[in-house]
Image (cartoon, rainbow, N blue to C red; front, top):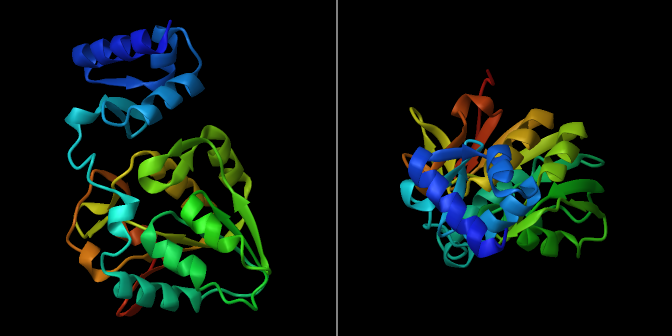
Length: 241
């Protein structure tokens, strides 16, 4: 089946049943799951992932709202201040996970140059900064490239994360709400964030205060899942459940 035919068939199927699992879509279209992932990534205006399911992008609130280029100057000083506090937690010879987004690009810049660390990341803007640090061993996770967040998504990356031992995971978010949890814009980030958090000894949420009381398209955790929340105002330790 040619790509235009696959996209049309997928759209028709979602019109009938609203959501579809990846493996069911692959069976319907007669292609591999990776091919379906590529089709979705290349047509984010039409399709996206929600909780492990494929859905029509028009059914998802806030789906088209995030752009890395647009976000980089928003609350830049607050992001830098929060990242400076987070950088103070980095110890020598640790393995770290640095999430995607503009806030944690600031953290990547602030990794102490004297620290010998291994850093796992999955976004190009973070990797571009880390590769210039002589004492950082960088592991860049791969997969299908997603331009809106300059990051990658793929099953192989998730499997690698699940096998790793991570000392500290620094996680970004688009929204933090007491009742609705911690949310982000991009559905492909959810599984990566969750896998990194599951493999980490410590989990730190790094956000500026503008994210509080905000809810974005998809929830990936609860506030109680973190050991601390770090903002420009300081670090607030939490008792993880």
